[in-house]
Image (cartoon, rainbow, N blue to C red):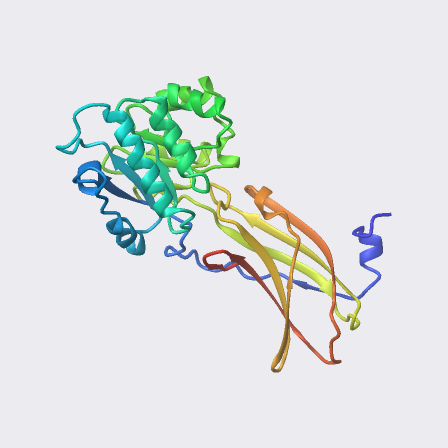
Length: 312
């Protein structure tokens, strides 16, 4: 008999909490729309070796779900070996940004589709998500050969959505969303019915228009014992549901707080949230309790990421 089996668990008097679903928060940092943060080569490096990268930092402070795009507009000083020079700029920008968590992704844009430029993105943005355009077959093949994970930018309209579906199938990209985001760029003025339907099939997480994309995680039920002992154990049974179009891509962790008056205990859980996708998400865990004074405690649950507190 498993220690999580119903027969073993229900021998204790339990409390079952079924929270009411909260209103969807349009301002949540992982939901909805993204913004391009575009910079041209000639404005970032107006003279050879003279970099002006502080403007990238300024844009990241205010942009919502920013996706960085480096446009290869040739500066006047470039004469020969332009693709090598642009690759050098990519590496400089990557070393300057580092692991900045405010940046949602980096779109791989190049001057001549050279492997030197592609490698510059791969090597310089190791801790960032890189995006390849869905129709860029050569780049996607190169990323696969280098065993580099990548997300997708899908340029879609009501006129070409069938071609986008075919590209997913031909290149076997249906499961990319399980590890990296699929970003939808609607080229029409608004998202049409075919685009909205396919965006959910592709598990797109962000769009340049309001398409109702992203995760929508809610706690449907939490079960735990009515009484526990100091230095004992606290068994917990969670039932979450993600009714959104995609998983949560930022690293995050579940925590439990036990609070009595001015005393509180924050206890991290070992939930494998990096493997949670969409639909029903069940987690069972028995956590060890510290030395606690007798009394009645309030139990709270929070999901904490490296950059924000996400409500459940």
